[in-house]
Amino acid sequence: MLALKPSHGWWHPEDVAGTLQDVAHEAGWVNAEHPGQWVRITRSFRDGSTQEWWAVEIVAGPYGPDKTERAFVATTDPQTLPDLSTCYLVTNLPAPTEPPASEPPFPPASLEEVIRLYGLRRWVEQSYKHVKHALGWSQYQVRSDKAIRRHWQLVWCAFSFCWYHASHPSGSASEEAREPSEPQAPLQSNVPAEASGTGKKNQRGKKHASPRVLASGAPSGARVVGTLDHAQALLERLVAAAPTSCRATPAESA
Image 1 (cartoon, helix red, strand yellow):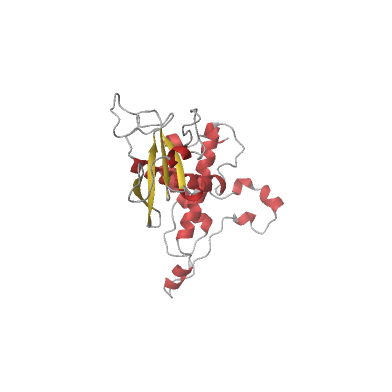
Image 2: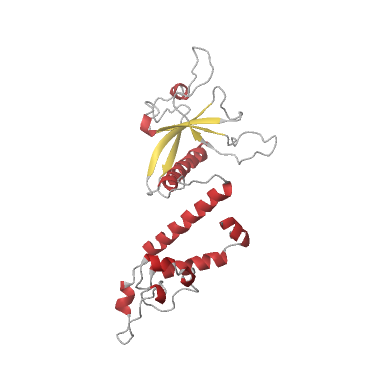
């Protein structure tokens, strides 16, 4: 399903309407009591509100219920066809009245169903725009299909961690609910003891003493822990639950 411009047209005689907008103007609209070929539809929006629209199926040129593609015009005002609230659509979904000579690749769709599906498609486009630009799906320097998919998975993992921590309260609530007699738990450090208090030069020389990459499990007590430790525990559960085919081998990771 695609959106077209109002001026989308086809070869036609000079005295015959040959664009989607021109054919819509000739659909016989007079008023709501005499709509001609226009059909009243009720559109439901994400916030729960509804709005009255009008729609007509274009039967002209390469479009029609018996053709490969069908075209529609949906608007709030069939008289003026305002630019901001008028949609010109084309789809390959078959018509419900079309006799199925063979099994169609897609289920038939009525006029109301086509308009409803287009409303969903706009949200898909909006979500894809957010994913592409906000999450950086388009910002990679790889070429192979496997590398691109791997980049997407890493982005989603990072986004999932951020979403999880943003949707859970911080450790302040746990601190207030802690019993007075419970001793203060020491903060866990990810830096080895022999590397603490040394500069970057000395730390680079002790790569063999680096800490574990993954935690063995989630923290057992209701106390404040480092966010890195918690994220590592979540990552280990994801790795353990992932299918074998989804895990990268050492050669692939290299």
